[in-house]
Length: 246
Ligand code: NAP
Image (cartoon, rainbow, N blue to C red; front, side):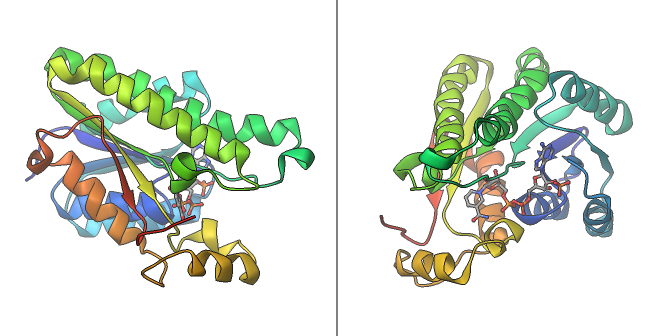
């Protein structure tokens, strides 16, 4: 499929976002991706996307900044055509028990994860409604479904993404636009590499499949949800977590 227009992936420079961007590129989609500041990683992702033979646009864009997101979408559309699909993968953690959590860490996580997802959805939905087509996948986490001690800010941001997404799915279904949520468990990326050996070992015990997931395994689900094969699926929250239990 070498479709006209592009698919936007936020946080596409590293981790799950990169795996998603590269997999969708291999499927023939032109890719526009943003990141916060890591230019080197972005250039590596750009190279991998170009190897797939599609067009790519990327730029730093703080997802929590409404105006910057509007500008990113406008620039991406000028560069490689109208946005046809959106994957919100940019996200951060700032873990701490509530009793110690600085309010700025609460706001940073809600601002990046929840406001960021709103900002990108808000920037593309009018075009999707006008063209009566489009698909969105928003990245949550099992922490948004089950909760996780030390992650009140992160869990709240992800539960917010879920509520927003199922409501948006209902708003847009009549326009032929689908919105779904992917909730990964413990996936091998920089985000989880930063955890202590003790926390990683504890996490492993909670995974019935006794291994961490790969970013490509999340990308497979995102790819399916954006594809016509998922044409009758909207408003779903799907785990990809190796059967994780509390
Ligand atoms: P990661 O490896 O840490 O990568 C994060 C990406 O988001 C980077 O491209 C980063 O850009 C970008 N980003 C962060 N803050 C941003 C901002 N304000 N504006 C724009 N871009 C920003 O993370 P990951 O593990 O791939 O996680 C991706 C998503 O999956 C997140 O939403 C995360 O919550 C979710 N998730 C991950 C796991 C897991 O186990 N890894 C599990 C469940 C859910 P820079 O490098 O420039 O900062």
